[in-house]
Length: 45
Image (cartoon, rainbow, N blue to C red):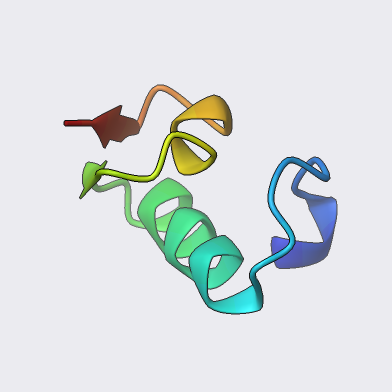
């Protein structure tokens, strides 16, 4: 799952968080604008 993510953000921990949110599925709330580009499951505040 992590290796299939687009190359939007290179931080490995952030990529794990996004992959986990996509797998569960969960909403991930973040202030990081890069993460919000991955999926609509990531909500930028």
